[in-house]
Length: 313
Image (cartoon, rainbow, N blue to C red):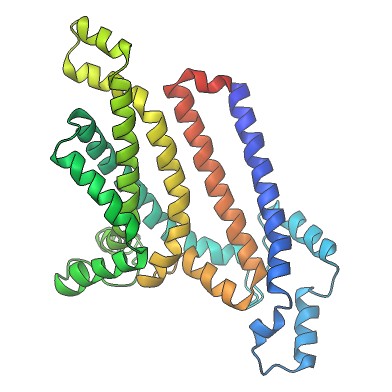
Protein backbone atom coordinates (compact mmCIF):
# COMPACT_ATOMS: atom_id res chain seq x y z
CA UNK A 1 0.00 0.00 0.00
CA UNK A 2 2.84 2.39 0.80
CA UNK A 3 4.38 1.73 -2.62
CA UNK A 4 1.01 2.41 -4.21
CA UNK A 5 0.70 5.74 -2.37
CA UNK A 6 4.30 6.73 -3.19
CA UNK A 7 3.77 6.11 -6.91
CA UNK A 8 0.66 8.25 -6.92
CA UNK A 9 2.41 11.08 -5.05
CA UNK A 10 5.37 11.07 -7.44
CA UNK A 11 3.11 11.08 -10.51
CA UNK A 12 1.14 13.97 -9.02
CA UNK A 13 4.28 16.03 -8.41
CA UNK A 14 5.51 15.34 -11.95
CA UNK A 15 2.14 16.42 -13.36
CA UNK A 16 2.25 19.65 -11.33
CA UNK A 17 5.76 20.54 -12.55
CA UNK A 18 5.03 19.71 -16.21
CA UNK A 19 1.71 21.57 -16.40
CA UNK A 20 2.86 24.71 -14.62
CA UNK A 21 6.10 24.86 -16.65
CA UNK A 22 4.22 24.41 -19.93
CA UNK A 23 1.69 27.06 -18.89
CA UNK A 24 4.49 29.53 -18.14
CA UNK A 25 5.98 29.33 -21.64
CA UNK A 26 2.63 29.07 -23.45
CA UNK A 27 1.26 32.08 -21.56
CA UNK A 28 4.27 34.21 -22.53
CA UNK A 29 3.93 33.14 -26.16
CA UNK A 30 0.18 33.84 -26.22
CA UNK A 31 0.23 37.16 -24.36
CA UNK A 32 3.33 38.62 -25.99
CA UNK A 33 3.94 42.12 -24.67
CA UNK A 34 1.50 42.54 -21.74
CA UNK A 35 2.04 46.27 -21.27
CA UNK A 36 -0.61 47.25 -23.82
CA UNK A 37 -3.30 45.28 -22.01
CA UNK A 38 -2.17 46.45 -18.60
CA UNK A 39 -1.76 50.15 -19.41
CA UNK A 40 -4.30 50.55 -22.21
CA UNK A 41 -3.92 51.72 -25.78
CA UNK A 42 -3.09 55.30 -24.76
CA UNK A 43 0.11 54.35 -22.92
CA UNK A 44 3.29 55.99 -24.15
CA UNK A 45 6.42 53.96 -25.07
CA UNK A 46 8.15 55.37 -22.00
CA UNK A 47 5.37 54.11 -19.75
CA UNK A 48 5.52 50.70 -21.38
CA UNK A 49 9.29 50.51 -20.94
CA UNK A 50 8.98 51.47 -17.30
CA UNK A 51 6.36 48.77 -16.68
CA UNK A 52 8.44 46.10 -18.44
CA UNK A 53 11.38 46.93 -16.20
CA UNK A 54 9.19 46.92 -13.09
CA UNK A 55 7.70 43.48 -13.74
CA UNK A 56 10.98 42.00 -15.00
CA UNK A 57 9.65 41.37 -18.49
CA UNK A 58 12.92 42.59 -20.02
CA UNK A 59 14.81 39.64 -18.52
CA UNK A 60 15.47 36.54 -20.68
CA UNK A 61 12.55 34.09 -20.63
CA UNK A 62 14.54 31.33 -18.93
CA UNK A 63 15.64 33.78 -16.24
CA UNK A 64 12.02 34.76 -15.64
CA UNK A 65 11.01 31.10 -15.45
CA UNK A 66 13.79 30.23 -13.01
CA UNK A 67 12.86 33.12 -10.76
CA UNK A 68 9.15 32.30 -10.85
CA UNK A 69 9.61 28.55 -10.32
CA UNK A 70 12.06 28.94 -7.42
CA UNK A 71 9.53 31.13 -5.61
CA UNK A 72 6.48 29.07 -6.63
CA UNK A 73 7.75 25.91 -4.92
CA UNK A 74 7.55 27.84 -1.64
CA UNK A 75 4.01 29.04 -2.35
CA UNK A 76 5.06 32.49 -3.52
CA UNK A 77 3.49 33.13 -6.94
CA UNK A 78 4.76 36.70 -7.17
CA UNK A 79 2.65 39.83 -7.51
CA UNK A 80 -0.11 40.69 -9.93
CA UNK A 81 0.92 42.87 -12.84
CA UNK A 82 -2.37 44.72 -12.57
CA UNK A 83 -2.45 45.83 -8.93
CA UNK A 84 0.94 44.57 -7.65
CA UNK A 85 -0.72 42.69 -4.82
CA UNK A 86 0.50 39.17 -3.87
CA UNK A 87 -1.01 36.58 -6.18
CA UNK A 88 -1.33 34.02 -3.38
CA UNK A 89 -3.41 36.43 -1.28
CA UNK A 90 -5.78 37.21 -4.16
CA UNK A 91 -6.28 33.53 -4.97
CA UNK A 92 -6.77 32.66 -1.28
CA UNK A 93 -9.67 35.11 -1.11
CA UNK A 94 -11.40 33.51 -4.08
CA UNK A 95 -10.72 29.80 -3.63
CA UNK A 96 -13.34 29.35 -0.87
CA UNK A 97 -16.03 30.75 -3.18
CA UNK A 98 -15.27 28.38 -6.03
CA UNK A 99 -14.72 25.39 -3.75
CA UNK A 100 -18.06 26.05 -2.02
CA UNK A 101 -19.88 25.87 -5.34
CA UNK A 102 -17.90 22.99 -6.84
CA UNK A 103 -17.90 20.80 -3.70
CA UNK A 104 -21.64 21.34 -3.21
CA UNK A 105 -22.24 20.50 -6.88
CA UNK A 106 -20.10 17.36 -6.53
CA UNK A 107 -22.05 16.26 -3.45
CA UNK A 108 -25.31 16.76 -5.34
CA UNK A 109 -23.96 14.73 -8.24
CA UNK A 110 -22.77 11.96 -5.91
CA UNK A 111 -25.95 11.65 -3.85
CA UNK A 112 -28.53 12.13 -6.60
CA UNK A 113 -26.46 10.25 -9.18
CA UNK A 114 -26.17 7.31 -6.78
CA UNK A 115 -29.88 7.27 -6.01
CA UNK A 116 -30.99 7.59 -9.64
CA UNK A 117 -28.36 5.17 -10.96
CA UNK A 118 -29.26 2.41 -8.50
CA UNK A 119 -32.98 2.93 -9.06
CA UNK A 120 -32.51 2.67 -12.84
CA UNK A 121 -30.26 -0.36 -12.40
CA UNK A 122 -32.85 -2.15 -10.31
CA UNK A 123 -35.61 -1.44 -12.84
CA UNK A 124 -34.06 -1.14 -16.32
CA UNK A 125 -36.49 0.04 -18.94
CA UNK A 126 -38.75 1.64 -16.36
CA UNK A 127 -40.11 5.16 -16.34
CA UNK A 128 -37.15 6.59 -14.41
CA UNK A 129 -34.69 4.77 -16.67
CA UNK A 130 -36.31 6.25 -19.78
CA UNK A 131 -36.36 9.66 -18.11
CA UNK A 132 -32.62 9.39 -17.44
CA UNK A 133 -31.91 8.71 -21.11
CA UNK A 134 -34.04 11.70 -22.11
CA UNK A 135 -32.35 13.95 -19.55
CA UNK A 136 -28.90 12.96 -20.83
CA UNK A 137 -29.83 14.09 -24.33
CA UNK A 138 -31.54 17.32 -23.28
CA UNK A 139 -28.99 18.52 -20.70
CA UNK A 140 -25.96 17.95 -22.89
CA UNK A 141 -27.64 19.78 -25.76
CA UNK A 142 -28.29 22.90 -23.68
CA UNK A 143 -25.56 25.51 -23.08
CA UNK A 144 -24.51 25.89 -19.47
CA UNK A 145 -25.10 29.64 -19.38
CA UNK A 146 -28.67 29.12 -20.67
CA UNK A 147 -29.43 26.64 -17.89
CA UNK A 148 -28.03 29.13 -15.36
CA UNK A 149 -30.21 31.93 -16.72
CA UNK A 150 -33.31 29.73 -16.58
CA UNK A 151 -32.61 28.84 -12.95
CA UNK A 152 -32.15 32.52 -12.11
CA UNK A 153 -35.39 33.46 -13.88
CA UNK A 154 -37.49 30.78 -12.18
CA UNK A 155 -36.12 30.42 -8.69
CA UNK A 156 -34.57 33.84 -8.04
CA UNK A 157 -36.65 36.38 -9.95
CA UNK A 158 -40.09 34.74 -10.05
CA UNK A 159 -40.20 32.56 -6.92
CA UNK A 160 -37.61 34.60 -4.99
CA UNK A 161 -36.35 31.48 -3.19
CA UNK A 162 -32.68 32.25 -3.81
CA UNK A 163 -30.63 35.37 -4.56
CA UNK A 164 -30.00 36.01 -8.26
CA UNK A 165 -26.40 37.14 -7.83
CA UNK A 166 -23.75 37.57 -5.17
CA UNK A 167 -22.02 35.46 -2.55
CA UNK A 168 -22.38 35.44 1.23
CA UNK A 169 -19.52 34.11 3.35
CA UNK A 170 -20.47 31.33 5.81
CA UNK A 171 -18.92 33.25 8.70
CA UNK A 172 -21.61 35.91 8.17
CA UNK A 173 -24.58 33.57 7.84
CA UNK A 174 -24.58 29.84 7.09
CA UNK A 175 -28.15 29.98 5.84
CA UNK A 176 -27.49 32.88 3.47
CA UNK A 177 -24.28 31.17 2.33
CA UNK A 178 -26.19 28.02 1.38
CA UNK A 179 -28.83 30.08 -0.42
CA UNK A 180 -26.16 32.00 -2.36
CA UNK A 181 -24.42 28.84 -3.66
CA UNK A 182 -27.48 26.67 -4.30
CA UNK A 183 -28.41 27.89 -7.78
CA UNK A 184 -24.80 28.00 -9.06
CA UNK A 185 -24.19 24.50 -7.67
CA UNK A 186 -27.37 23.09 -9.18
CA UNK A 187 -26.49 24.67 -12.51
CA UNK A 188 -23.10 22.95 -12.43
CA UNK A 189 -24.40 19.64 -11.07
CA UNK A 190 -27.21 18.85 -13.52
CA UNK A 191 -25.01 17.35 -16.21
CA UNK A 192 -22.79 15.63 -13.64
CA UNK A 193 -25.79 13.97 -11.99
CA UNK A 194 -26.84 12.44 -15.29
CA UNK A 195 -23.32 11.23 -16.11
CA UNK A 196 -22.79 9.62 -12.70
CA UNK A 197 -26.26 8.04 -12.79
CA UNK A 198 -25.73 6.61 -16.27
CA UNK A 199 -22.30 5.22 -15.40
CA UNK A 200 -23.59 3.65 -12.19
CA UNK A 201 -26.68 2.27 -13.90
CA UNK A 202 -24.64 0.63 -16.68
CA UNK A 203 -22.09 -0.75 -14.23
CA UNK A 204 -24.86 -2.00 -11.95
CA UNK A 205 -26.54 -3.93 -14.76
CA UNK A 206 -23.22 -5.37 -15.95
CA UNK A 207 -22.27 -6.63 -12.49
CA UNK A 208 -25.80 -7.88 -11.72
CA UNK A 209 -25.59 -10.32 -14.65
CA UNK A 210 -22.34 -11.92 -13.51
CA UNK A 211 -22.15 -15.45 -12.15
CA UNK A 212 -21.11 -14.54 -8.61
CA UNK A 213 -24.31 -12.51 -8.18
CA UNK A 214 -26.45 -15.47 -9.21
CA UNK A 215 -24.48 -17.56 -6.73
CA UNK A 216 -25.20 -15.07 -3.95
CA UNK A 217 -28.90 -15.20 -4.72
CA UNK A 218 -28.82 -19.00 -4.83
CA UNK A 219 -27.29 -19.06 -1.35
CA UNK A 220 -30.32 -17.20 -0.04
CA UNK A 221 -28.83 -13.75 0.57
CA UNK A 222 -31.41 -11.02 0.93
CA UNK A 223 -32.11 -8.65 -1.93
CA UNK A 224 -30.60 -5.78 0.06
CA UNK A 225 -27.30 -7.59 0.69
CA UNK A 226 -27.02 -8.66 -2.93
CA UNK A 227 -27.65 -5.08 -4.01
CA UNK A 228 -24.85 -3.88 -1.71
CA UNK A 229 -22.42 -6.39 -3.24
CA UNK A 230 -23.41 -5.35 -6.76
CA UNK A 231 -23.12 -1.67 -5.90
CA UNK A 232 -19.65 -2.09 -4.40
CA UNK A 233 -18.40 -3.83 -7.56
CA UNK A 234 -20.08 -1.28 -9.86
CA UNK A 235 -18.94 1.83 -7.96
CA UNK A 236 -15.29 2.20 -9.18
CA UNK A 237 -16.30 3.40 -12.66
CA UNK A 238 -18.83 5.83 -11.19
CA UNK A 239 -16.24 7.14 -8.71
CA UNK A 240 -13.82 7.74 -11.57
CA UNK A 241 -16.48 9.68 -13.48
CA UNK A 242 -17.28 11.69 -10.35
CA UNK A 243 -13.62 12.64 -9.90
CA UNK A 244 -13.40 13.69 -13.55
CA UNK A 245 -16.59 15.68 -13.05
CA UNK A 246 -14.97 17.56 -10.15
CA UNK A 247 -12.15 18.61 -12.44
CA UNK A 248 -14.63 19.55 -15.17
CA UNK A 249 -16.73 21.55 -12.72
CA UNK A 250 -13.71 23.65 -11.82
CA UNK A 251 -13.53 24.68 -15.47
CA UNK A 252 -17.28 25.16 -15.75
CA UNK A 253 -17.22 27.46 -12.73
CA UNK A 254 -15.97 30.28 -14.97
CA UNK A 255 -19.31 30.58 -16.77
CA UNK A 256 -21.37 30.08 -13.63
CA UNK A 257 -19.43 32.68 -11.65
CA UNK A 258 -19.93 35.23 -14.41
CA UNK A 259 -23.68 34.59 -14.59
CA UNK A 260 -24.18 34.67 -10.81
CA UNK A 261 -21.54 37.38 -10.20
CA UNK A 262 -19.52 35.25 -7.80
CA UNK A 263 -16.03 36.45 -6.75
CA UNK A 264 -14.34 33.08 -7.36
CA UNK A 265 -11.29 31.90 -9.26
CA UNK A 266 -13.34 31.60 -12.44
CA UNK A 267 -14.06 35.32 -12.64
CA UNK A 268 -10.45 36.02 -11.62
CA UNK A 269 -9.24 33.82 -14.49
CA UNK A 270 -11.41 35.72 -16.96
CA UNK A 271 -10.21 39.15 -15.86
CA UNK A 272 -6.55 38.06 -15.79
CA UNK A 273 -6.83 36.58 -19.29
CA UNK A 274 -8.31 39.76 -20.71
CA UNK A 275 -5.39 41.95 -19.62
CA UNK A 276 -2.58 39.36 -19.82
CA UNK A 277 -1.83 39.19 -16.08
CA UNK A 278 0.48 36.17 -16.35
CA UNK A 279 1.37 35.82 -12.62
CA UNK A 280 -2.33 35.47 -11.78
CA UNK A 281 -2.83 32.91 -14.56
CA UNK A 282 0.20 30.90 -13.43
CA UNK A 283 -0.92 30.94 -9.80
CA UNK A 284 -4.43 29.83 -10.77
CA UNK A 285 -2.99 27.04 -12.92
CA UNK A 286 -0.82 25.78 -10.08
CA UNK A 287 -3.70 25.84 -7.60
CA UNK A 288 -6.03 24.08 -10.04
CA UNK A 289 -3.47 21.35 -10.74
CA UNK A 290 -3.01 20.85 -6.99
CA UNK A 291 -6.78 20.33 -6.69
CA UNK A 292 -6.67 17.82 -9.55
CA UNK A 293 -3.74 15.93 -8.02
CA UNK A 294 -5.38 15.79 -4.59
CA UNK A 295 -8.72 14.59 -6.00
CA UNK A 296 -7.06 11.93 -8.14
CA UNK A 297 -4.93 10.82 -5.19
CA UNK A 298 -8.00 10.47 -2.96
CA UNK A 299 -9.78 8.64 -5.78
CA UNK A 300 -6.89 6.18 -6.09
CA UNK A 301 -7.00 5.56 -2.34
CA UNK A 302 -10.74 4.89 -2.42
CA UNK A 303 -10.44 2.63 -5.46
CA UNK A 304 -7.56 0.80 -3.80
CA UNK A 305 -9.75 0.20 -0.78
CA UNK A 306 -12.80 -0.88 -2.84
CA UNK A 307 -10.79 -3.00 -5.29
CA UNK A 308 -7.40 -4.25 -3.99
CA UNK A 309 -6.35 -5.20 -7.53
CA UNK A 310 -5.94 -1.49 -8.30
CA UNK A 311 -3.00 -1.30 -5.88
CA UNK A 312 -1.01 -3.68 -8.11
CA UNK A 313 -1.02 -1.32 -11.11
